[in-house]
Image 1 (tube, one colour):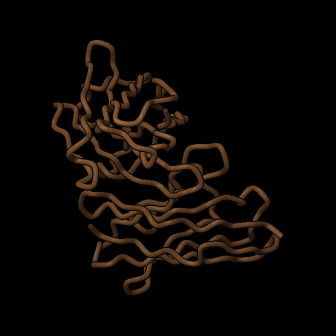
Image 2: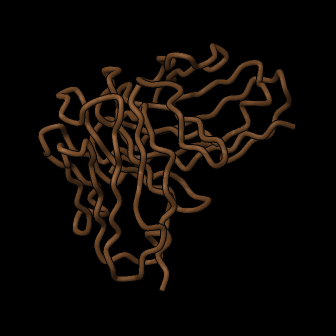
Length: 123
Length: 107
């Protein structure tokens, strides 16, 4: 079973860049079976897929965020990261790192989730 | 993007009841439909994938099915621990989108 843990600042100022890291244990992010992604949830609202990245580093982003988002792998640290530029209050949310894991699911099915981290955008 | 319309937005039922939650996609998604359960303060948990396959460890009182263009999550013999918000999600093609959720309350 994979274990995912998000880390990063809980408060970001408007117009700045949100940066989060997801540390992976129980498996290697270089495993060819795995994809790695981010989902967010504004307080009291529903879920939004932000983007995913393959083991080889090929990203796929939600078009609604594509101009501002970047996901990357750090294979040496067994981590992957999210950067979201030019944030506004609308980006305030709990951010989860996710993966389909080793169960053979399609790449959009998320069986393993981090606990989530609340990021508030405010001056 | 494929839109997922989920209904009802909330429901209240008693222990032992059966409840159904429906999700409709804005276009055909074959069987690329998942259901998640989310309890307050927790990350979502995968319950059902590929429309009707129960995730390992999920109680058999949960089931997923398809009827035409509608996807249905049924909870039989509702238990107190089933109090949660349930989300559908399609994985037909990116962007993967979720329904707005159904909050299930136990009377």
